Length: 250
Image 1: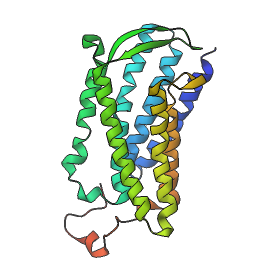
Image 2: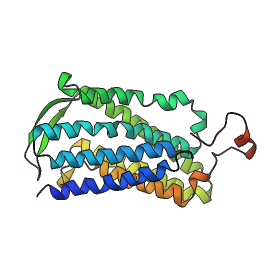
Image 3: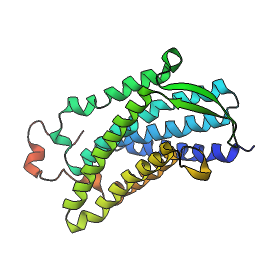
Image 4: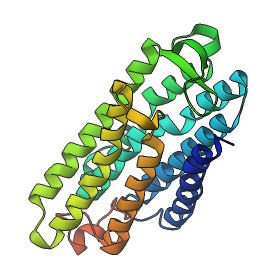
């Protein structure tokens, strides 16, 4: 019973993030719609698996769900970068093979995470942790985990830099929602950095998936409230939109 509040703390964001993914899928052909859909689905998966890992009372079950949540985790950084590119109007300047290729390093990292029992390069050691109100694990993170973290942060910070530039260059009418998008990107970055630093405080659990849900909800509110999905990328004209090879689909 002590674990129930923690389970619900992650299960509720998982349900709502799944709803965001459904909403964004209906808008997948608009600018940034597909990476936004994938980001929302990844956040839902991460929160769901984390809730199940807390609910499980065995080391094997907790380890299984904790490793499986990486299916969502590895998608976060590349998706945020693609959303930043779409929002800032830089999407069309980046070749499609690069937009798809940024997922490859994270997919390789995912393979290592899911097969950790064969090499222990994702988590070097895993032991029971009884310091929390629920059954958990104490892990020593391995070299592949840290390489994944560096790459994910690189994607996130490049996206933040793109959003910061878009915010600085936006005309006054768009400056407010540009800053909201930048804030949405900064929220989970700060929370995850605090967690990995080991100074998380009394919560004693990873707040990143919850913060990501808040971040995605804020970004979605911004895009829908200001109808950003209906905006052509900056610098485009109607004739550009009708020109061969240009499409409103990412």
